[in-house]
Amino acid sequence: MLTVLRILLIVAVILVFLCAPIIFFSRRNKASIQRNIEEGLRALKCAYQLTPVDAGEFQSIRLNALMKFDVSQYRIEELGNLSIMTVDSGVMQMLSFVVTPFEKNMPLLSNDFIYVLGGQRALAEFYDLVSDPGTAEYQAILSELKSSLERYASLPDLPMKEVWYADLFTVRFTKQISDLKVSEQLFADSVASFVRQSAALPLLSKAEQPAKKAAVCRYTEGLLTNGGPSTSVFLNALGEEKTRRFFENVMFGTGLYE
Image (cartoon, rainbow, N blue to C red):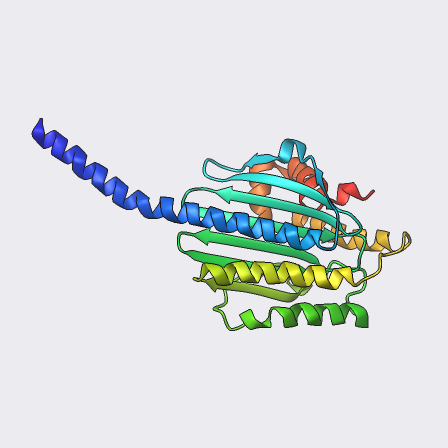
């Protein structure tokens, strides 16, 4: 009996030793994600009114046994759609913060921050989903966005796979970060710069808005047709029809702008 108890005690100590770092980093990373969300919302609210949107069946999306997305959505008045998705699988946590403009000539902002124990993979990306990315006005916006994040250029780059939509990345920062404060500052700076540039722009006219939406729809349709690193996961778990509804009604919000 004593031998069995000793074995059980040893096993318990080993489990505690193995689980303690996971629990510590999980709590720390979830707190960082919450701070990022609060900072992103605060920055947007400085220039825009945010109206919560009921994500309906997509408030919670389970893709597999370990990955469940919690989803929230907002309409950014006089700008576009905001979707926020979080994941906590124990070892890994993730935040996706996507702003899709429809009423101003701005790129789509996609912040994907992935936390694995003590390291962060930060992807701050601006997609050129506009009718004419070659205009001087739009190029000036991209220049300002890139300049505002240039301080992070020296951080180690993440190895990224080739994707069919690579030509849409005029401004892109994909970094491996070990310092949580640096990761949070990159998130804050990307949203703040986006808000600053967008707030200075006039609204697109009713005649201009369909072309802006069409650029977004071409991209989302391309994801459904050609796939992508995260899109393929959704397609495999949800199927094409349900993934399309999620993209149109929640993640990118094209369905809100009929």
